[in-house]
Image (cartoon, rainbow, N blue to C red):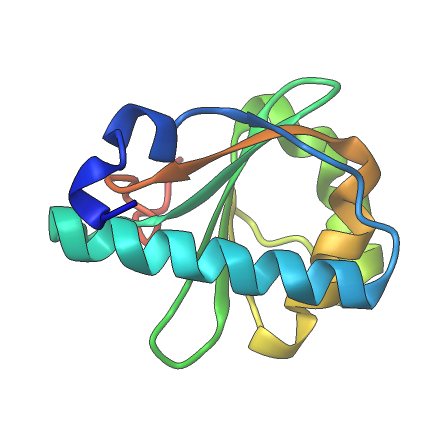
Amino acid sequence: MQDSDVDPIDLYAKRPWIVLNTTYDIEAWIDSYNRDLQHAIKKNNATGYGICFFLELGGEIYLHTTQEGDVMLDVTPDAEWVSPVITAATGVAAPGSQIWALPGDTLTQLILGLSNMIAATRIVLDHPFKVPKY
């Protein structure tokens, strides 16, 4: 199948989450997600790209990695309940806004901590990750 044969609706569709239990599984998922995202960016010249995690108990977390390899999270108000889990998984205290800045070396631990709480994911290409919301 060629790139032009891929239906963009399928590429950016909401996909059910499969719980990942090991760091190997998470690293393989990160690699796969990164390839899909790089493909999407090339085709769309995206600027606010990343992934959206839809949580089982409500709310969304938008994840973006910076060029420096750090992790930006936009935790929607409906997902604030997950803040203690993010802190426990990454060792980073909750910020005063819904935008979290995490060191890049916490990504695997973050996904491992959240894995049981994620219902679905979707690639996003236009989320304003760096704009704090008050």
